[in-house]
Length: 448
Image: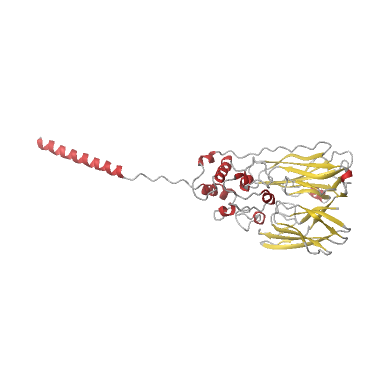
């Protein structure tokens, strides 16, 4: 019995000693390392820019059709250096003193204005273009990163902000119409653009004036994702589209509506373009004559890359001046090359000459081409200034409108030359056409 007790006691002590040793060893082990938080910039790049911005056709490659427009790559290798304190190609942003990202100052950062749908912006289309808006969490996360100095390294913003998955929604408030004594408003009322489609519509509106008026300013407004908004007159008034009826350029099967297409051949350009939120003012003493009850065709084009319906809606305010203040009556320029093609996977420059049949004074110039366009130049044709470049634009989406400080005097037989460079990054031949996948080559403007 004594042997058993001794043996039991020794065994118990060995077990206790072993257990204590084990506990001591476990206690002495270093605690598992806590994972370092991700850099805020890395989260922005991986969770926002890479999946929504650095996509084919947008900000992924210098070969993207839109690259000449913005010169901005947002891939992981380029995005940071392309944003911080970099001046944008956006002319309005340059004038306002904005840079793409100004560390510590989100108000002066164009990036923030391009993603926040609740900010009234005059700097072009909301991004991502045609797609779903960013969430409120993503927008606030980027805003706070800018406020904290926009560092490339370090976790400076609370990641829980990203949990707000509510998609940024913009409240669209139609602009107020002018007082009756100051002008009038015309509109394309709300219409639906189905998911993953584009829709181009026309509405013939009659102006409400009962006597001839003279318009010296246009102000236009449109919803996001509008490719363009244009105001047209008609060359012939003998056969006009029905008034106040929306007409589609495309049929339900996506084919061209032949009737609408034929009606377009009767158009005269009067104003507008790819910047649907803009104001144009004629030079002092110059105005556009608008007889009573003039038929004007309003044209809007929207594209929808989302999985839900999109709403289209556009307005134009036309402001008038007294005839006594009008020295010259404005006429519109609408010089277009309808017969050209761009081979697949190639760059091509196309020059086209246009002449006037009488002496004119050109006061305004702008251009229109689509996303394959890299550069649009306008040169003087003939006279002592022959070949002089008087206009250049590299931003197809927001073409520059030049009100010439020194108007261009042209004699009969002289005119303008368009020199347009395209970079066809697609694998098919691209011709002149009416859709956003086709191309155009048009000089718009005014003269007297």
